[in-house]
Length: 614
Image (cartoon, rainbow, N blue to C red; front, side, top):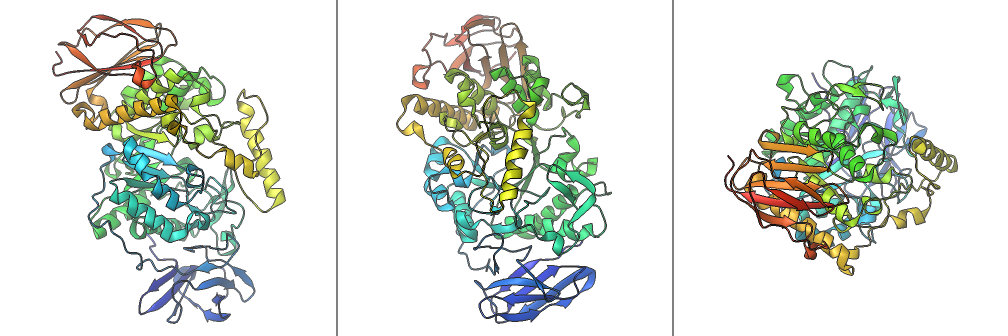
């Protein structure tokens, strides 16, 4: 039976604050109220939990936990760290916020058009409030969901968020708990779902005091970040509970719609019931209690359908996962890069396979990995795969943080957009790509430990060794590196960037309005590819009118013929070559028939529709 127990400081109006801590090796645990130096002894309960009620302690009270009458630390389950990762924790009243989203109807996954953003660099100010002020831009673009990179408290004020050490505390410099709630409330008022990126595979190094409370880590495994979190060793029930309670907190108290689980391949668990399955089951219990659905999306480099297969079929039951194969197939094909993991990609047939089956490596040999890799995802619904041409990892983990804007032509950027937004999968954009942001997205930190800073610098250099990148990596600790990564929003004064954004808007509008894309799936998809011309044919035939898209993934004009198996007249509805989208305005036929030849502009996307398919 799963251990389910609240942790941290829970305030109830009229009753006070109940403190609960898991510290199985401690001989005594006390709460030290920092405002008056009052000590509140906690009572030991089963399994090493310590608890105590303080009727006088309310919202805003600052406190630390005292272990064995000598060691003083913040609460591992803290909900707010206004003075940073080394400062005292603060009691939060989650009943006080005045929500206005009672009529919000959560969106089904197939309606998600996700916009991934980093709060600190999305705007000049880098706060939740400024994201709210820029929501009209995202509404105008047509996105239906934003995905926030991690907001759990991290050291300093500059970080991607994956160095968080208090999973339940909202970053103070972004606006703290109320700031996040205001953002979610505003998104729901605008019809936008909110996805939150959470990290359950490691914690950052600075301010990480978990091991002083209990066996949160295990020596059984190592990860890129050191010892693995303890999901299957002695006392692991309580570590699992720590992270499950965190997930429930975001969904219940912050009204988050979906969680994106970072790098689940680094959640090492060989137990009979994997942590991900237990998490999914607990989220389903919360759904039943609240009467609203929630979505769990995994980031995984395993190509393993167990993550998204139903529990009754031996899977973990998650709703979706990121598809690295789709990204790599698109990136390698468009850029010609072939170092690192891109050495496994670069052929048009691989993109064709990704569109039809979900994974490219589905049980075949990977030269890069030097082993057979992946599982067959053919029968998994297309909505279960989140796809993109850019994201924080694939841009930010390049040595110079170059976006696709710097790697391919302007016209090829429109091809990338079409491949993502007209695919049958759940599409995701990375902030700024819609207008061709030219600033990089670099890796940045603001640690206070000089040795740690140097270790981060060296670690980044080692990461880049597998790629043929030239130049010197920017200093992650430098504030300039952070400032360089902020969006410029050049579409407001650059016609070229505005035209690219308009093309994204047109693609999104088509995806939302075309019946053939209302419930896109691989079973109603025809994909053919000509590796000689680099032309891809993509036909959605689920609902009428059907869509036929021609992608010329070539920097020269190419001739191709419409697939003979389709019939009737196909009328043009969208072309990236139109002058209003910054194209060369090459004349294209407004109507085509089966087998008819057409000359496609270089690096172009052309969409036709028809009411009949033979």
